Length: 336
Length: 264
Ligand SMILES: Nc1ncnc2c1ncn2[C@@H]1O[C@H](COP(=O)(O)OP(=O)(O)O)[C@@H](O)[C@H]1O
Image (cartoon, rainbow over all chains, first blue to last red; front, side, top):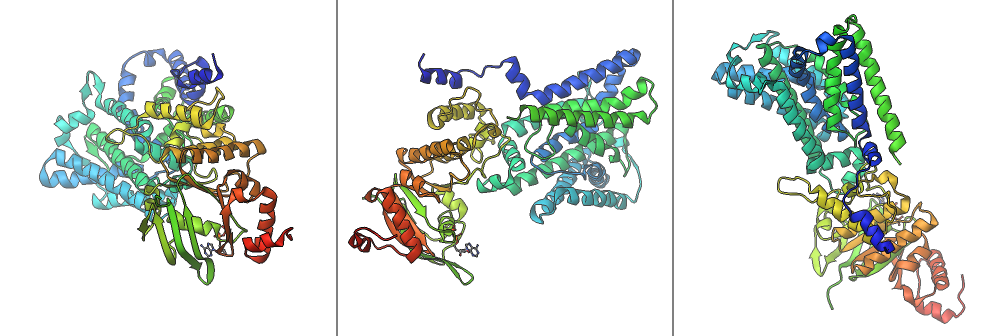
């Protein structure tokens, strides 16, 4: 074979997956999946009666999506080099739209749309301050986290609302019912994870997000729409945060203005445990999804194996640190 | 004769009181590589930024393929086929080769969905045929961090060529490259001419300019001090002329030829 033909074969032949090339390319996904399986095995061995029954998995599939859903667009936003810390407040603020619209129109569907619109507006405001006023996202979204929570409390006058009308309604069943025995929260999570993966890796939006997060100057020189891309990602994060808050309210048939406060750390932990780079330019949806269930499982698991409540925080911390350290080491080892 | 790809007529630009450029007229034909030389502050960057639409000239006219363009912007210049190869700065290091090749203009289906398989295929073709990447460990999925400096320049130049640019601007592409990598990079510049495209090549090193440019334009203090085909002089003569221009601010071919041995 001539040298040229040899080269042609190397480049044009079908991509040949060897075990080695596969494990290098998917190192962080393999890492997080292995960690997940290990943690699950430990819990199962220590508390078999809990972890071998289906009940825990059903509750798991209902509650993990509340923060796990938000972790999906958040991954894209972090890949683009931005951050959003306001989502726990948007989780509640969105429902203010529902309450206002449903109480005047008596249409749950319109209320649902109003919730999503509130989320979009909240995301737009974040994006406006970051992209147009040019203030770092960390600072902007700390500010709007307070602002949105404050607005929620002011608008509902600090009151909780019971949402009896949603119980058994079509929107209620779509968001919190069952499909083939699976909780709808989980179904939505899977659907949104697939959409996120497509957007991040198989769509122009994700292409732009990767380049902007990797090298913003290059993105500018090459004419990539930096402002529009980041704006879209902030709005997506806002919409999904409002959706998750609505799911949570519909599931417990109750809205309370402080809801969502506990989603902040688990959602961020899921993203970073999943191997997304804090510095932007690199992330995985698979990692975030597995990371969400890993983080979500610790609470239940630690209690089931008989650890005192406050040990869960220690385990959280250890897992987050262990995971990000492993990702950093893998990255250094395989980045040539 | 067809109209030149680019023509500048009496272009001037000043910043505050500083005359960065005055009365610059210039033509660039298809398949021509123009070497642009001059000291720091001579106005090279200003000239490039006018051509790429980044600066508006205060005076003068710009023509692309014979058509006068009055309100040139960066977007418009790109649409007219002007691509700039910025030293490495325009690559996204952690991303794969195919994402870099198709950085701002990915191949998409309706709705913005990427044709990844096709982009991988085109990238591996370009790697093989244009970049001469022979190492088996380099694939379209390799991140740019895996490339040497010369390979990065090659990637940036091939990217510009691939997008059907008619005029490629290279701003000191050899800066910071090793000897063998510089040679590779100069090969890429020669490839531009072979592809029938034009280029403006800025470099501080006269050896590099001499080995790739068809024509040399010397800028000095904002004006064109000299302009001639490379083939007319030997490298030694060229070096002498450069020194002369630097010292006197002008170069008169008739003078020099009457000079018969030349003074430094
Ligand atoms: N944006 C600017 N503002 C003010 N002065 C400038 C600006 N750009 C260039 N100049 C001046 O114009 C002159 C030409 O500069 P430049 O085009 O950068 O030269 P070169 O690229 O050949 O080194 C210099 O005197 C420089 O100080």
